[in-house]
Each structure stands twice: as structure tokens, then as C-alpha cells.
Amino acid sequence: MVKLRLKRCGRKKRAVYRIVAIDVRARREGRDLQKVGFYDPINNQTHLNVPTILYFLEQGAQPTGTVYDISKKAGIFAERHRNRSSILSASFNENA
Image (cartoon, rainbow, N blue to C red; front, side):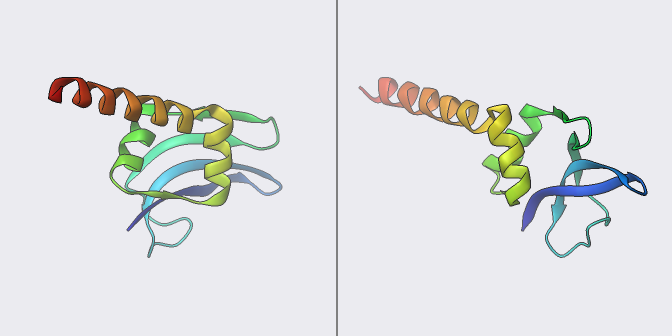
């Protein structure tokens, strides 16, 4: 199973985190499948690769609590809901 979680980088007392897609059995600094974002809690900066995150979520990846909160604040889940509803309405219109 794949999770979207934080991977610690930076120096002592100046932590920054990469948001990565990683196998659940891997350790925190283990080998990741793909880097999908960046989070700096000190400067409160976030950079997310939205299409890649949406791809992993569609494939069944589970975000951790912190990654979920960061993504929700960025509006990723609203965009995912918008994409899903447009796909469902398109398929509904084709069947009608």
C-alpha cells in the first residue's frame, strides 16, 4: 500500500519536509516512489504537485493526517471532488 507522507530534510532545529509517495513498509527517510511536494513549517511555505497527488489518490494512496491537512488547506480535495463530479456528469450525459 502507498501512503503520502512527510520525509524530514534540513538541518538540526531547521526541519523542512518533502511530501512523498512511499510504501507503508519503508522507514521515514526510506526510498520514496516519487516526490510530490514540499512543506516548510518555519516559513509556512508549501509547494504541491497537484496532478501527481491527484493521480496517487486516484490509485488508492492514503495521506497521513498532516499531509491530509496540508492538502486540504491547499484545496486539493475540493479539486478532486470537482474532477470526480465532472467525470460522473459526463458519463451520465453519455448514457442518457
